[in-house]
Length: 526
Image (cartoon, rainbow, N blue to C red):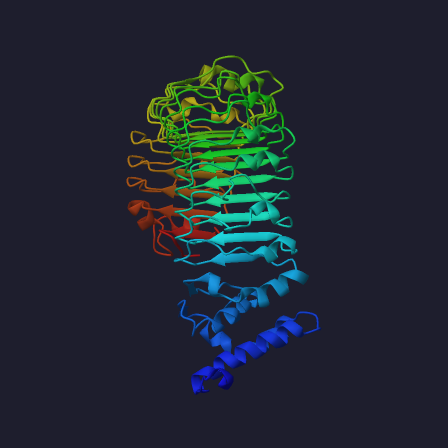
């Protein structure tokens, strides 16, 4: 420094130490060790949580900060305004050379373009994450992503100004298996090069509100894609013509508010086992071309304008779970008969206020074990006034126009274990209300005018849990008490009944004192 006319002062020593340290690290022949390298840079780690500007006087600390990120188990919040000035390659790239270490560019709020990390192209790192770079507009100036041959996992999230994934708009790492693009609000299209990704298994696109279309290259049959999630893509109106990869097993479409149609060839996705459609208010009809016969799980949620449903439900012989939630325009199901080979085990219908009836074929579902009907006020009766005979779980809440409880024929359900009933404001008592002895759990909820429980409740010899909520007029327990095998009793918001069940002093305390667990208004008294 003296040679160049610079007088050595105290503030220069940090730079000298940094330069000597980096030179020493670069020449080390030992196997890279977090302990050894960490101790060498321990003095610099004091600056890890500081916001460091692009001033030349602060640049020597940047190497230490990025070194620390390699060894800490949790990320350090840092503010780097100019990544180009960082001597990152001296430490980070040396470590990547011998380890399969994920690289993450994170919390660089002022970053507008990533530097050309040419060193990454020949390294072994398998994971690349670019997260929360608020000013980032383009990736890798001068180096296409496709040259990062070792990358298997790529995540780009929290980059709202990002317009393109690469200058050429074609290249992605050729061996990529998992790709996540999240919160890139200005991204209008995906690279056409998606069809070249012969190893891609999982693709998640979330929060890309300007994304208009998905490239038709996705339909390339040689792509082994099994998992596809598209969420919060508000400008997306349709899927590419020709369909999706036939290898697809899971398809989730969430909060695509302008999506007008589903993929036209859903029926040809012979490997698809799970399909979820959520918050797609512009959908009016559902899968007119049919659904794949191997479908196991189907959920339709918050599709406000879907009116009819599943004309070919009879062909879904592998369907186990059917959930229809928050579809207020839904009026009916298809009445086509379902074959006896159907293995449907669970049906859940929630908040479908205009659904007037259930299909008649539902009674014939001998495989059905769980039925949930919640907030369906227009529902009047069960199919043929009967319930599926092999039900194990039955939940009916806020279906105020459904036929009276004692006409349900519950005593015929010899496999029933769980029963939950709620929202019947006009029920005062249960005259001749017979229940099967197999039942183990009963929940009575929101029956404000209920005055008495079934008098034969003590005969339910298998009952282990009894929950009673919001029954404000219920004044006492049955005269003959509760089943002797009861293990848990919960009473909440039933002021009159709670008064009679007060520990040791209540009039009904002797009827419940033997129960191992008693919960009153959320507190255990036993």
